[in-house]
Amino acid sequence: MEITFTTKEKSNKRRKEEFLKLTPAERIYKFLALVVRVNKFPTKVKKENKNNFVIEIKSK
Image (cartoon, rainbow, N blue to C red; front, side, top):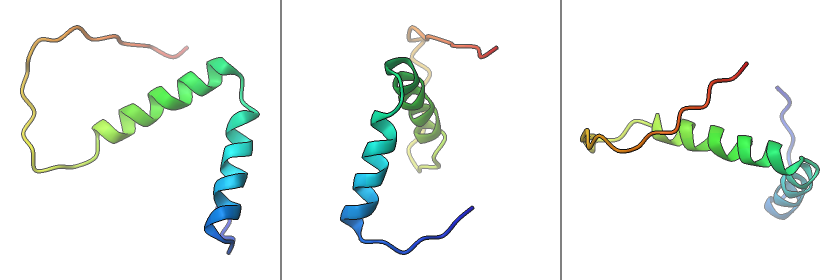
C-alpha cells in the first residue's frame, strides 16, 4: 500500500485515467465487484428474501 498526498482533482483524474485504460469487459467486472462490496457493507436495514432472479458469476 502506498500513501500519496494529492488534491482531490488530481486523484480523481488519475483514477479516471486508470479506469479508462481497462477493456470494456474489465470495466464490467470492476463494476460487478463494486456492487458485491457495497452489498456486504453493514447497515441497520434488514434484508428481506424476495426470491428474486439472481445472476451468479463464478470466477475460474
